[in-house]
Amino acid sequence: MRVAIDCHMVGQPAPGDAGNARFHATVTRAMAATGTTSDEVIALFAHEAARPLLAPDDPADPGSIRLVPVPEGNLARLVRRVPAVLAEERPAAALFSYVAPARTACPLVVVVHDASFHLFPEWFSHRDRVLLGTLVPRAMARAAVVATVSETSRNDIVAAFGLDPELVAVIPNMPAPAFTPRERAAERVHERFGLVRYCLYVGDVHPRKNLPALAAALGRLGDPGLELLVVGRAGHRGRAIIAESGARWLGPQDDETLADLYRAAAVTAYPSLYEGFGLPVVEAMACGSPVVAARRGAIPEVAGEAAILVEPDADAIAEGIAAALEPGTADRLRAAGPARAAAYGPRRTGEAAWAAFRRAAA
Image 1 (cartoon, rainbow, N blue to C red):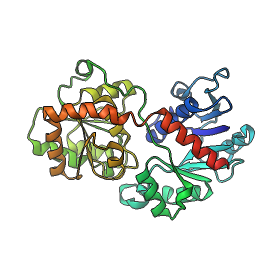
Image 2 (cartoon, one colour):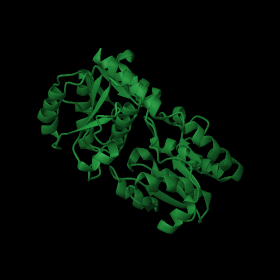
Image 3 (cartoon, one colour):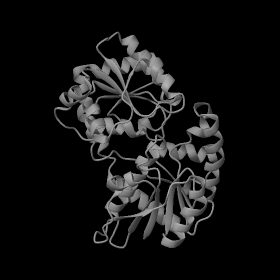
Image 4 (cartoon, rainbow, N blue to C red):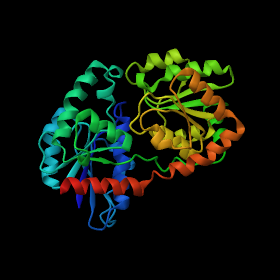
């Protein structure tokens, strides 16, 4: 089976669809790793920086990824360029996130990572509310299969949009290969950033991520040696939220650096009010960081017993962090995290993606 995956956001030079980019690159690699000799994965990319993030063109490898350039161009790209490429390449089905071309020569798999834009519109800018509220339902209506990243998100999407549950598939996310335990991370982090002891938050910053509650929780702990560290992009109102939290903000980091920051953290906190998956939780667990996360959305499904789950208010978060800092609890979480994260890997993701494509093609 020949399939196409829209990877236009992978390797983009400006902040934007970072989560979608990571997911599409992950699914592309996972499908290539789990395909058969008769399968072919085509990645439609727009930026040269995407090449090393996807794969080289290697026809001799039956699991190779064939890179097909499709220049960036927003609406023109979706209306003209992508349909033309799909008509030429003739895949059995093609995958897009949230927004898809109105007309294509093949069936569509449309990924909707979560229903937050519909359930909690107050967390989004006016522009995003209008675009997502208009374009996403249209894309889902055209899809042969709607995919999402967890059973929790699947249930929410079915309920929110009245979809047939049989048409909604789960393609779970997974951490990149860099996210594993590794020794001497604290030394490397101190040498590069001067950090000694910190509570780490990772992810785009906007209202639903609940960073003010985390900052307030650290204030309640009364531990002046525990610094709040934020890694990620500033989204809607993000810069103001970070400034008000008093956190040290490192911005986005590459996977190797981010993995060290997880490994060296006293605790990783993820107080988000809603998640369709919660990839930073899995990344942190994979690196052996003690994790405290909100008992919201798909986080309990993903984290299981390998994280301390709390209500997303300052007092509960503070209690969870205090517990995670206890040596015995920290040791338990550092051991349990990698084992739990191992449940999310290339085979599970790749096989689920191939199954979704076969359903769409049928």
